[in-house]
Image 1 (cartoon, each protein chain N blue to C red):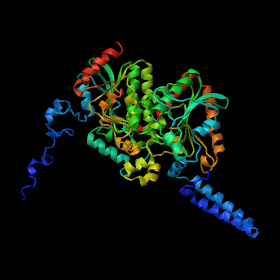
Image 2 (cartoon, helix red, strand yellow):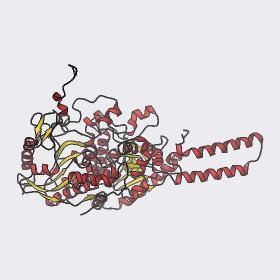
Image 3 (cartoon, each protein chain N blue to C red):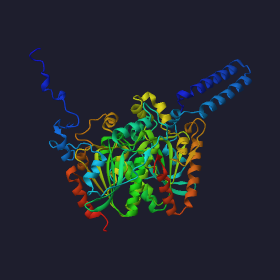
Image 4 (cartoon, rainbow over the protein chains, first blue to last red):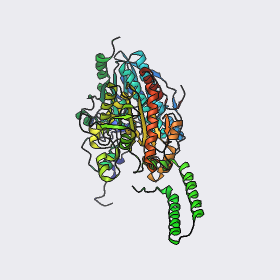
Length: 279
Length: 319
């Protein structure tokens, strides 16, 4: 062994991280004990990187204890177009259902936040990149319509890779469907708070995610319509630093505020105290 | 403009060349080939029928993108009359990729807007290849408001590969510009007709596409993603675009059966580019008829039916 060869035990990359006990922060490489990470709401204590959060977790963090009732939990995607690419749509759905324990990419329902009753929809990025197909569109449209009937606010936490290609133009039309439901909710003078989490892109960013009366972004979330690679290849330009981050959006006046996960529940409570309909 | 034949049209071109040869030969040598000529002409007709009646989705995509196809301004100037162009979104710029204004159609005063492509490089640069920036969608919204204020129906012509993926486009919030249109078109208190005349590219198309009646030209396509883009992601290579085009169900007849569009507008044989005046007349008749029908519907009913139509789209199981 030569004197200049690298001793392997200093290489951080090769260090064995026991599965399920420690997590490595993808942003600053800090190795964090799971318990600490969970206590910190899946935010890196060192660099404040916000890890992706399962939809169920988010609801637990935001809702008043035991106040959440799920709606339309049984809706499942079907392969209307009989889509067969490298893998069939049905196979993909099955594998994600098994992997995540979810039926599709959004959980919707009713809960209370600081005692304000609200309709809530939370997208889960771990299910086919939380792409929007018929089920996501339908569940979101239904919960908005429910909110309009009950005269309660709508809160949607978005995270999405965009439209679900496997459902072709049917997925595109969910953009019109969800925005239409929001139009009627808005006409009824009811508030809609949109929360953008990492990442919110494509057809979801170009529909319900960006028409909130108030728009909140999680720190450092990637939010944009087109992907950065597509933009670079189309324009042959270098992208500005921080392009398509929450901070970039705030600087350009496109979101109302950036709120860290720990403050989100209280911020929502405060906002609702201003704009939720009096009961 | 001499039409460049598409790949699948080569058999027709070859036969036409043979026919021309034959005629030339006949003239030069003063021989009567009439029966030959007639036979050849019959064969050409039959070949055309064979090809054009059995177009694959990918072949239709190529027709939809044909540079000689009538574009928005051709329709605005010829299907419509007395077109007055109105510029700008009053906020940032005038988007040349989306001209619009007021025009007459079948005796009805309308507000109309659409995506505009260019036929050659210089014009394409001006028109940004039919890819609108946020300004285009905000101009469309301004014109919708104008239509609503003065009680004129709103007509949109869709022909875009997609909204422009650029730095400025993101900085000025293309997502929001499209999303606001989706919301506002749903509650616009005048009759609305949208026609996909060429490419219906994803959110950029839908951004002016929420309407009481959505029409689509026979060879136009309307899709959540381009066949090439879909192939690159799901087949790992763009060369699989023909398969992707088939899988995406993006043709007018597919979308009619899925309930995404309301009517297919027929095109002259071989596509709208083969006969501009026929294409222009077809669009005029179809839009005028739809406007006449919508004019009879009370506005509240119009809004309910518009909402329900889009509300129904999508398929799922359970609940």
